[in-house]
Image 1 (tube, helix red, strand yellow):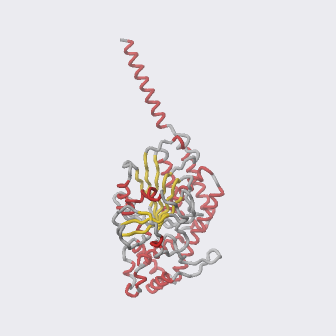
Image 2 (tube, helix red, strand yellow; image 1 turned 90 degrees about the vertical axis):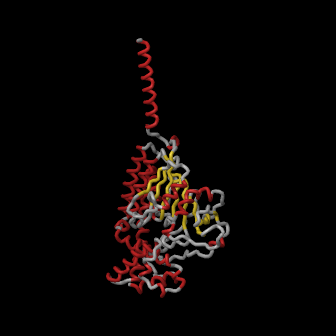
Image 3 (cartoon, rainbow, N blue to C red; image 1 turned 180 degrees about the horizontal axis):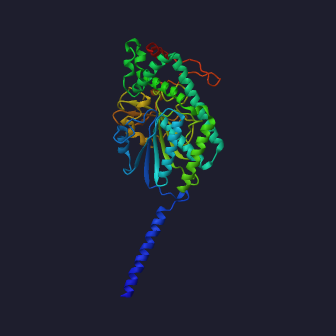
Length: 427
């Protein structure tokens, strides 16, 4: 009887030891990225400027739901990143810090992907830079990013201010213009509110074809003008210290998660939609993100922010520039181009995550790949006939800057100048 009792006790002890060993193995922090078991998936969606209240990136939104339906792993965690959406450097710094912390929390258990729209893409780019700098402690690079963020914010501010001053002088007129610009945001989102303020019949046919661009221009001007509320662009040292503190905090979090180097990337894929590109201030770290898909449209006049930003990144093995066009159906001939606020349409959401598969077998040109989407939800196709894209390439800078920093010439292309004149009549 005693032997049987001792045998039972010994079995219980062995079982307990086994359980302790299993718990120890599962929950002990790993020390290198190569030992990580990424058996789950996570998808982070980042909205852009002025879009904190939008529905497209939240559960129940058409874009969100179509992305969710196309996920191969139905257990994938979908995480909408909530940030202010304010058009300031400080807001993007804060959002990038929040995103970097989420990435650390999700690593190492998850394969992480990011979908980001507009300046949400630059939030993702900054987050990747912060994570790299948290490991490398490269103070020179921190100082460089701070300097370029300052210069970029200054250029945005001066560009918007110059155009606004050309449109309206005096506080009363500028207040009226501000009202027009607020309505312009709705117009850029696909409504015609702004044009209730403008006598459309007085515009020629060419301007009617660019209604969305009027709203987009209004939104862009407001984005630029609001940089005046952001004091950070005036103080490089302030931004540099802010970035240094962020990286120091992230370094501690990385170490607590068992990450001491970047032998492997932390994020598998980043899909940047209509992201304003500035490689000096907002370049994604390919040590952190393995593949970046920069998706843009030649019909988007907001992305370049009056010529302050670019559409594409320079040639890089890890970064693919993908220009998209739209047709009603594959057999149709009519080609259109998405505006800045139209990237959240359901037919984009349905196929967005298949872009790596769609473009992987094509030789990438210096400017990337041209991809054609269809409103009837047909599978997108790589466009091999460049003539389809020769109809519309509005790549001219809207505002030409002089060689001296901060001084601008009020030269705009004829179409935009005509639009500005119509707005000026209003105020």
